Length: 358
Ligand SMILES: Cc1ncc(COP(=O)(O)O)c(C=O)c1O
Image (cartoon, rainbow, N blue to C red):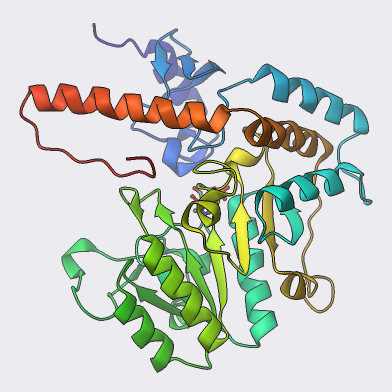
């Protein structure tokens, strides 16, 4: 049956008069007559304005790890609302949430909150630069770290080079080319190239930024050995290893990729699964590095550690830590993969899957 998008289409016509592309995020624009406006999300399903019901495998790009409108998290958020929002002061839950994160992720010795993944990674890069007194950074080709200039580079496939540093382009207009010189791109899982890069730029590199499972790049995953090599090289060259766990954190294991692969970051960033969709993100890491915050390194923000988001995070992390939620999610994933594989195999369509559970 053809999907009816009459109301969504009408909404788009209205929205585009006040919103560029008719949306609040470029990624939500699917075309003039295909952009979907949501009426509500519950569990794993989303209903649009025309009452089409979708099984939503995207789950808001990841945050709705327990499903939309999880009753336990929403009840906690309402309690958080009673605290009053944000203040020019701190609240008690900042400690309880930080303590939970440290328990789940041992490398998270100290914790700072922000609102989005982008903000957390930006702060992490600044902190690494301040800590080392260097400006350059290494980044995995294909990794996504949010919409800030330092992270917005991509490799056009037609220019893709099998050896050497790939030719990269800014992902958007408005990014000063001067920023490009600080970034050194490496291909995931090529330990020799990584070592070469460290050697060639020794003394200049502040940070190695890794998205360990590249969510925007077919799910290409760093191998455990590669992460361990990166860890050793960072130690050898005095570089801060920043593992960006915005997507993998509190998801692929309670302690994220760091637990799964047995590698500890110097700094790590989290968002998405932290609070089941309430806006909060985390920069965490080694005490000696994190203590530079406020002692030379600026960090803050009006909306940082909002009482609603903090209360939601407290409950969401409790559920992920203390219940079998992650095991159930992993088993759904395995079943889904098997089912899709059976459908594709029955039609003779070659296919492969990536993911942390085989
Ligand atoms: C690994 C990673 N880092 C950073 C970000 C940016 O997070 P946000 O969209 O919350 O700014 C994302 C978002 O998808 C991400 O997947």
